[in-house]
Image (cartoon, rainbow, N blue to C red):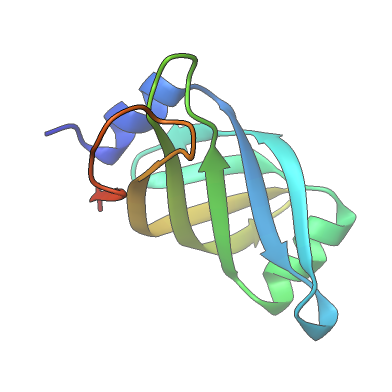
Length: 111
């Protein structure tokens, strides 16, 4: 079974980061993600940083690679470090895409 770092490496550095703003409004941005030890790192703009500082629960979503049946979703706790977010993963799943052919589990737990 692949570890989370192996999945992140396979899916690549481009993901979408979801934070929550004032009043529970979701904020989604395209980011480049790096892996350092057991943390995921990404640059963050003003709104994303403010959201993560106020509500540190975030999600990262990698779309399924061409021909693959699963996307990668990682939930975590973010800490603002300068102009970056350092995200400690708390849960990760492979989630089946709507266009996947055949049968298969809807979710596979990674972490």
